[in-house]
Image 1: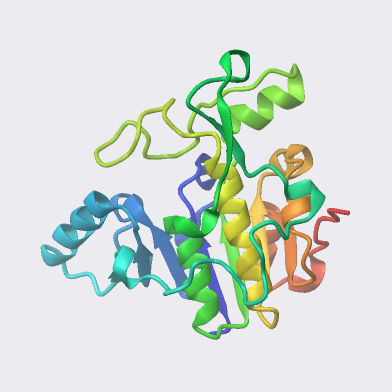
Image 2 (image 1 turned 180 degrees about the vertical axis):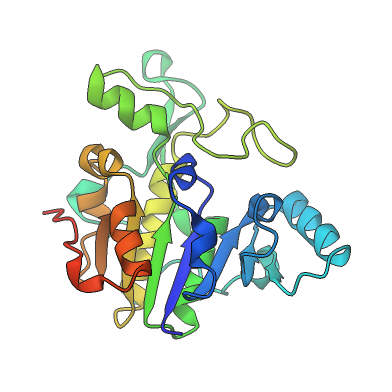
Length: 252
């Protein structure tokens, strides 16, 4: 097989029958995906200790042959490519800042975030799939901007920090409103660095049309020649063997 599917747990996952991906390529999942699809994934990655323990307990009590990876099993890579400096980012990406110790109104300090310090389950799965040497890596249901964040911004200019995850408010998952705003920058940065590290791998980022249209982060982070962006309709064409009918989304 020359294709890997890396499935996130964003709510856009619900609009595509991901069970149809089985047998079409190597399937990578994240965290609690086994709860709904115990037989779908070949690999499941979780960098959260409690979630990893849940996965291991489930696997021990099942007949599943899935390979489970905890934090210690992910790539020994800090997302930095040789020659990089932490400040070497395109102008559009200079968003590596969150407020610490206060707000702009009461003297809070700005600290530059070093995203090499952290890992995400989804972005680690993408890097591990690419590192396996596979030709194509299709990334789906990575709703990195929460659904309400981009929908509200597009409609009336307001914003929300509501978490967009199928498993929110469940065991070993944060609550609906606890997602930290800076994670979207961290995860997008991790993806961009992965695209750069594996220039001979073709990456495809799949999501809803509205998400792609209104996500103003994508052109800045997805600026590498080996990343294409498409919709779930394009993914269906891929699964159906109709790759020649796909017109990837122009970001620039």
